[in-house]
Image (cartoon, rainbow, N blue to C red; front, side, top):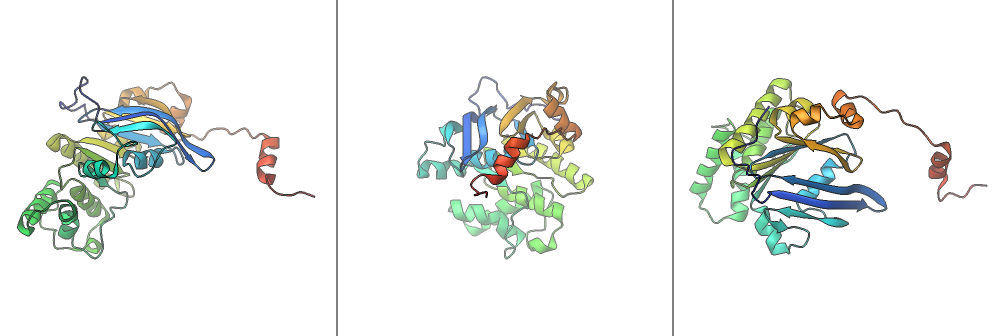
Length: 276
């Protein structure tokens, strides 16, 4: 289990601050009053079952969706009120490692890594190649820059995606299910890589995952979501020892007994349908 980095300063302005976040998809409420902070240099893991709202929360943290109400502050900038130019500048300080890697199949590994540099800087070609090779060294993929993504294993694709996400030395790094679909040995190596990235670059990292072992390995703190609300936020030990039954059900993978209201169930089935 990791410990909070020395770069975390409880007196400093949080790297991420979410207050009373509410989101609807049509009439359905997805997030219901989410409030959380992530300290500078901290690894925050967001966990929850399917449909808990963790992916929606991640999209809000990336400023990709507009909330019904509430506020989100990233590096001191209120993204709800920020203008397009401010968001563009902010996103240059953010890195994202997508769940499937999201490497462009028509580009070499090196070209994939250099893509953010091409889009957001005026660096010359040789400098970009050196920076890409440096980041590939960090993720243990030195010498793989000329291969195509199809020539990489699943774990290597994940590491290449991490290299691309940190090529511009972001202050914030977001990882969506980084170890999903990997065998335990490769997943463990990826967990160690995330810890090394935090310690080497002093980044604040948010990881969305359902992998318990991975969460317990890398997290400084864990946020547990369920049905659009926060069940608990705490250290690994605090979450492990939580007295909340729904938290323990998630950790032990126990299903909850569902009590069906027959009348409500029938109304839901027949709502808007004319019945003779």
